[in-house]
Every structure is written in C-alpha cells, then in structure tokens.
Length: 70
Length: 269
Image (cartoon, rainbow over all chains, first blue to last red; front, side):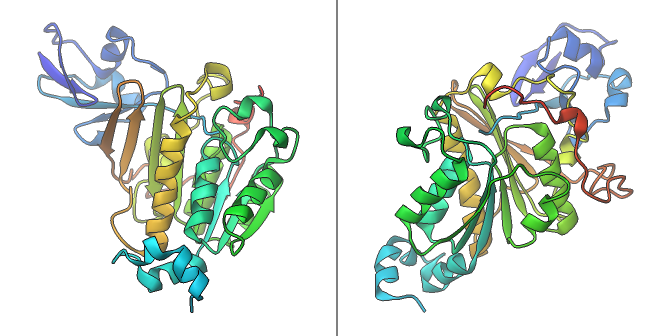
C-alpha cells in the first residue's frame, strides 16, 4: 500500500493490522514517544495512535520537537 | 514625520509599495520583544534594528561564550564574557542609533514574563529550551500578543506565527513539553551555524509584516527547513479544540513554569 509521509510517497507491505502506533515502530520514527502525528489534516490524540488504522492513500505528517534556538 | 536622514536610510523600504513612508512610520512606532540573544536572536535583533523598529526589547541572562560565536553573529570575539544583552545592544545601536533598545538580563519565567511582554506588539521566541518555549506560548496566548515560534536542531528548523484566538498555537500541536533531556539540544547535538540565520530571518520578517499589516503571516502552518536536503516544507495546521491553553476547555489559565522541562539545556548553550 502507498501512503504519504511528510510529503513523501512511501510504499509499505500490505498489513491490515497496521496502526499509527505500529507504523511509528515499523519505521523507527525519531522521537517516537513524543512525535505529534497529523492524519489527513487532523492532529491525532496520542491515546488514539494504537487504534487508528493506517490505510492506503493516507497522508501523515510527523511533527517533531525542536528545542534549540541559541 | 520622517527626517531627511531617515528617508535616505530607509529609502529601499520606502520605495516598496507595501511599506512607503507610512509603513516605515509604523515600523518606527512598533515594539518587538526578542527572547534569547543567541543563534535565532542574533539575526532577528540585527535585522529589526536595521529595519528601524522603534522599540526593541531583548531578554537573555547569559554571557557571551566562545562556543557561541560560530553562529551568534551579533556577538564578536572581544565580547566573550560580556552579558549577551549588552553585546547585542551595542551592535543594534551601532546599526541604528534611533532604535530604543531595552535589555532584560534575566531568564523569562512565570513570575516575570507577563510584565515583560505587555509592553510589546509582537514577541519572538529565540530560546533554546522547552520550558521557555511553552512559557512564551502560554504567556502570549493568554495576553493576546502575537508571536513567532522558532526551533532549530542540527540541520533542521521549524517556525510558525501564532495569533492568539485566531490561529493554532504551539500547544495545539504539542500539548505538553517532552520530559527533561528526552530531546537533545543544540549544545548536546550540535547545530550548523548558518541555520539560525535562515530561521531567525524568517521570524524577523514575520514581525515586520505584522507591524506593516501586509502580506500573509505564517499562521496555521508550520514551516520546516532542512539545510542538508535544502528543503522547505509547510504543514497545514488548525486550532486544536483540545488545546490546553487556547482550546474549548482550557486547563491552563495562567502562566506556569514547566518544571519538568526546565533544565533541558543544562549544558553550556
């Protein structure tokens, strides 16, 4: 299946059980425990990661903490 | 009324139809607070002084360190050891003696931030830790003062402009700070020296546009930049009804220090 992650098309093996939570693990996403996920323009509550399926055609944005400035 | 000297100094602004003499006067009447006189704060302070923003506040409790000079272009080698706000003030006044620079040699915290920001039209976050970033967001949202968020790390940067009550705030995206030391800081993970120049200049641009009332602010979008891949991206955002500070049922109704995040940057910045 094909999804878009941070604007980049990505092909993943079919996996009907894939959730946002398992995707973060599968892709070893940086700041996995803290990253904010936007799915189709909506920010997902962290509590919902485990029961939100990832479907073909989904567009996800991972928003990372950046704390530097000085 | 602008003097002849001012008309010459700002001639490249005044010839822009979006600025003109009227716009330049608005900039001169404008008051912008820069929190952090470091990587982001350096280009912000220099450009806003050059642009003729009439009142510029700059807050930072730190002294200039040798390791700052690779990116904090407002501080020069002979400034090492000097308070950053004093070093910054000297350069800002040298660029433009007409600008009124107000220095705050202190860290912002829940006890002082509301009093400091109330004298300003626009606030810019150039800090290096999450405690300050969340505090600035909360204080500006609660006081209804627009501000620019900026964050950098290694080769990556992000920025967004917040118009309280109108656009998404920092907590709409990141409801809580990460635990202390969970996310590396520039002092721990490094930062390419030119990066804050890019991000800070964008933040300064937002302040100028806000004062002019021209163009579209970077609201409801997070601009991300990666210097290695030389890519800018824009992530559309909207206000989060569950936001703890600007949502429908806010749980944060007064500024507070995020104690768990306070010592994120306990190494030399």
